[in-house]
Length: 542
Length: 78
Image (cartoon, rainbow over the protein chains, first blue to last red):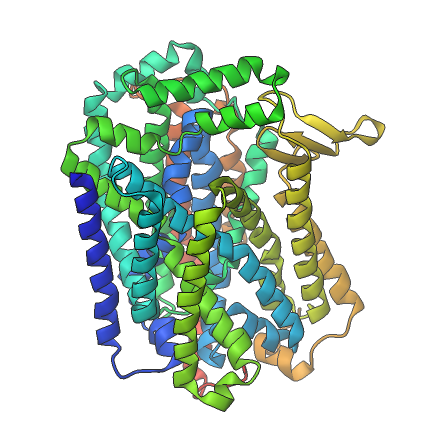
């Protein structure tokens, strides 16, 4: 129960930070202050909160779980590629969006697209696709909170109650604190996790009898492939470098780029982002792999047994049985199990709080959705002019309550795996939307019809992949099921982990087709007025 | 010339990320860190150094100047 008490204290602290931010902003009922903290965040808060915003439950629990089953490849696959691509996109795109936000007062990406391409309802279509791709994050955040509290309290806090507490806490500090409260909470969470994550690594290492003996034992065992990247194909590994393109296209990240006081604040973020990724992901991945050496935790043994049965007998099983074994072998809770076994109670509580912090990263998405709704729909269709800015902020707050209640209601009823899959699709979807930003900022020849083509293609591709994976069951570990191979060339396959197109993840063709559509459709359609293009590109040639 | 070198550096680092040379090696650096993990850790440090180079030699300071020169914002977004 002690870890659960520590987590509750943490939640209280987080709530206080949100209310403190509210008191700090007292009297200001301006949209820019509530949704963007008056574009005034300093370098420290900007770095850690931007990083914290990107740190989801998937990063902490998912990375160790993936490493538990696939080995060290997880770090290169998901972390170091992000360490290169994300700061690069912040450097190239984030800084430009910040400058345009300062110059023209944009608060959302859709506002910029509407202005840049002189479009109205096409902007609304982009808003709808962005919102639909973002909602699963909020749902999975609440589910993760309920599961974490349930695990930490040894079942004393039921899932429905844990989820309700997390939903209430997140809703309260976003409701009161807006962007300022969310940024402060994210900073607090990131610092907490960075500090106690390192301590946990040492404590678990000592508890396991030292990492040297554990690593050497794995090396000498049949599990030695976990220390290599054999379990993932080089095509898949290459494909994954497209996924981090999604980061800058996520509305909450792009909106966050608008909060910096000065452009210089981006410098530290760009430079230290890869180091922050290294500091958090490396221990998680390493611990996930080393968990395979643990012999005195029955739950981990059961996972390994399920993995073994799946690998040896999976081919002859019914798809439902394979799915069941896959679920049993999933390692998302291995970090929690290691903490439970090896860390003292107080540290397990603090780390539980840190994990909770990552799980609660849905705060930024909730605020972003609220900002998008009030700016791209409410204000755009006349609400702000008719009712004023104070009503706009109140509408944003009401939207926060409604979206949280909706997410909680869905979280109680639907199975978690659906939303985990939806998030996978969301990464590919937002990566596929990234050509919108590149075209808007770097190509004067781009048009609103090109933007519409990219958006519709993204929506179609995400739905098509989802339907395919629903209709064709995942095969057992090993060779993929080939679905379409004209002339012997494997074009479309169903793999144990998803879908492959020419051996690549779907995100690769999705991004390439998006970029091509933007080019081809823009070349065929009418460009915005010269005066509009001049505001973005001055006298430069395309 | 400086910018071309930086673009080349970004491309080289992207290629280096693929790291096919340690794909099947389970060698343990310092007796406990798998070589593939160690390599990608070093890669992350190299990415940070590259970002420092970009920020130092290719910072888009013209954007800052444009913002400073702009009069109070036009409300063209709405």
